[in-house]
Length: 269
Length: 309
Image (tube, rainbow over all chains, first blue to last red; front, top):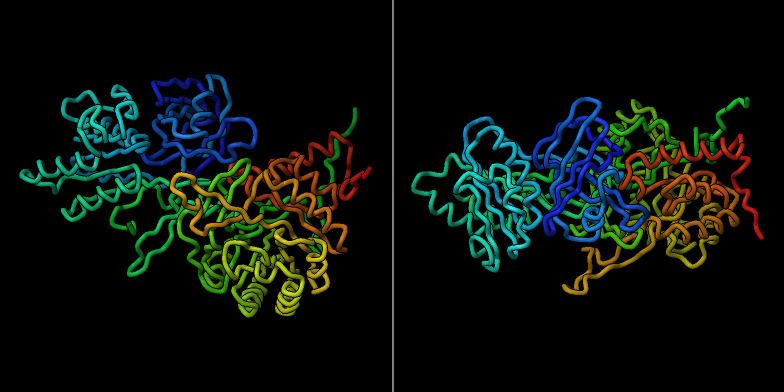
């Protein structure tokens, strides 16, 4: 659907450590694809100036009365200000924005990889797959234990063996990065074949590059959701671009418009 | 009961009569069509399209924007599709949107500026050409021409001769005497001057020890620049007889009114579009509401009526 600029009202904004879930009442129901995002601002004054991109977690409601939910991590001034807002506070949102994940119809095993704030794009993908009763596993990486999102917030996360938590310092789950855990999973999966596996990944560029380098040589399709600083989020400032292959050359494409989800084969790593 | 007659917001910029004094600034509004999901862009005084060059331009490497206190730095590097693709793919669609369009142009050489201006002169959908003599982010993005009166005179004269469309010249604030620069544009045949373009700025990361922008320096915009812009627009208005279009940090109707009060014929709204896609029309509505409240019936009764001590 086409993006809209709307004024919303916060219904709840509750935290667990540095992680927050925020539900917002908006004038109309929106349809979105996991991986799409909203530009969100709600603080008074001109500083910070720009709204913040937040992945859309869920939408609800009916025509004429909608809700949208975000799961976010406090990483800087903008998200810190958002986390300080309360039920009843106004919020300005432009949504839904960008090009989300592509879920082809056929049966697949989906491996979702989220590093750092990348969990926020992986969660809606997991929720969609969980709704379809699809086969999926999740790899979530962070520097340390309290940088990992609360386990009970992971959609479909109670299924045994589905969730692989990873920390760089070994304080929780797998001792290493999410990409390293994925490498082990690929090695274990080689015996039974990987042709049915598809990967969706979101996180720091180095992680996405590592995932692409692991999976692409094995002919596993990889979709990556890129992070970038954005001013507008809807394609007019040209600030968020990334280099994408175009034959022998590379061209700059907008992360907010042609992305944030790209086929890993297209990205000029 | 008083009868509310909608105030007359029409604004004249040289030979062009605009329905109101609010335009979108180049580089913040795409080709205008990107905003049609949000509102009817024909409600604006005019739409200034993203800067066009003779050939498609890839733009600068990523690391193009950084937020700063009440502002932002950008170094996009004028990424654009080039004038031919604009003429063939975009221009035919502009007429349908029903807005008044002004094309912003730049070149690496005077000859490129002339070629772009000549090509765009054939596009009926364009009401005027805005000459970017001030982009700080490419070596030959105009600032080479726009930072001295001699350079600006030479460029403006040549482009003036290359097009029959109204010619606006967008000025750099990175000069010591904005009045003299504005006068140079006027004497070289500009129909209007528009100012300010961005102020050259810089941001670095203390930990990585690297600049935040791949271009190292970039153009500062947003509310942070408004007082500087307002002062320069005021000075330019005193220096020239041609219309001055005010730009710089306008976020609200109140901001726009300040520029009109110091003498601007009209204003352009830029960075505000990034945080609120409806910013331009909200400013149009806000000016109208202000005029109704203050019982001002025409823009001309307010514009330039600054009361000095």
